Length: 104
Image (cartoon, rainbow, N blue to C red):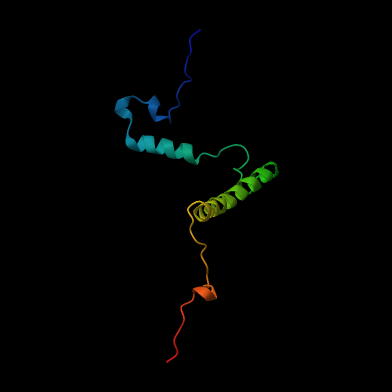
């Protein structure tokens, strides 16, 4: 058995001898191949939604993406307070920590 390639058409520039192959003939062939009508249904437009079978997995992934940074920062701050002995940050200082103000 010998494997034979199908004969090339006259429009195909590779069927021509090298001396007759020109950039314009190659370009014309490429354009005709790209603009040829394709058979079958048109390509489906993806609206960005996942199929229903992936919704639970997407929810878990989203939850992990949101929760992990919060858990990491909270753990780091708690580590600094418990192990390293750092004081808790306060928005308003306690009354005993305030400096007394002198009235003129």
